Image (cartoon, rainbow, N blue to C red; front, top):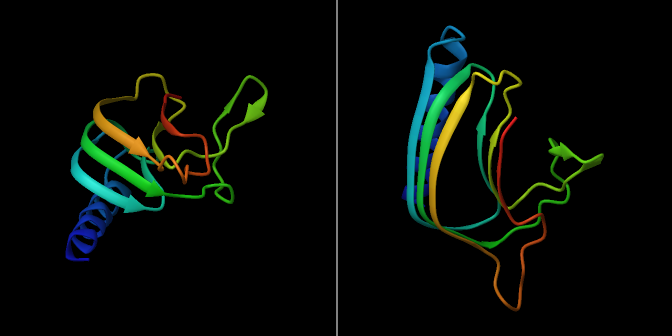
Length: 124
């Protein structure tokens, strides 16, 4: 539980800084490693985030149901159900670039798949 609280505190601190900063100043860098969760994991670039890099090495979403989540990515005339694990650059500006190294991602179990659209990295 302490790890989860620490992670939430770190993310809350980043978000608070992002809300106060000028639009072109936020650069987010983050690293997640050897994390197992029940429920959705989202890394979203929006608001004042203008660039960043994320590293994930070992993320296992054991169970998740994302059917009731809003903010659905759109493409090919449909809105997709959110993924249990996703990184999404939500900025409309093509100059906003978020890079990532994603290694060792998994979701669900053979007898209990996650309910959602799998693992996704989405640009614009």
